[in-house]
Image (spheres, rainbow, N blue to C red):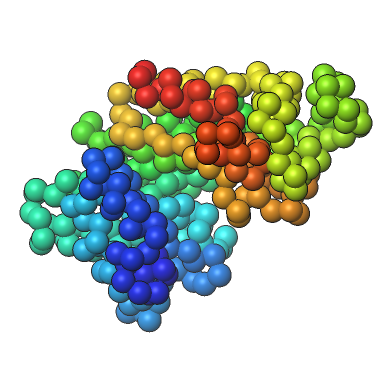
Length: 322
């Protein structure tokens, strides 16, 4: 949202691209990210609250009735200072932003806007300490506010079976007419727990890599000197922690769909520069393993596309017809 202060919101690259795709008939979701990790959550009447309201007011005319879904907040309980994670002020701020969006939609479009409003994503619901009075209030607000269509979740999981904790938490708290988004989901935390594992003997033999090499070192090598796609495919296929969960996307989306309450699930398309640091080590978060297109770890394909994680691209394509 601070980007809205850098000029016309309609000219911001992410919003401009999204509105273009919306005009071409694609389904679109815009999440509004308020980053307060380095400053306090704004309070009513404060300059920081005025700034947040000004930023929202710049975005709403550009997005409303153009995108299909507007999510108020991205990851509110992560994008704040730890001391405020269970603070009523966090809830009050996002409720105020949501009401401002609701009022704008009502004033400009009545009941005729195509844009549905969701509250942004809940994280780490597999951990008891992340299910708090603040997340309970979050879901109570979602339930009690007729203009809100549901909530978003981001199940980045430490275990392939942990996704049910998210569904067990939110589903009983939704109204019968509400749904949920899953605009991010992955096994990134599970993969992170295997970064210090030795690589598979098969991979070491095929590619003449020392058998004591660790998983994180292979990823770091690929980030520094991208692999041919077959080598990246072999690295993943020969790693049991990855290969044994190659159907994760299908399984997780199947669980989402089985609830009858899924609005939209989306998945990471490509590796961006932020996830592809040359400082990658055993404690890094391996987002690069989640992406379908791997422009930082895999050499470009001959057809002009980036190299792929073929497990995820094949799963993704199959799910479009599921």
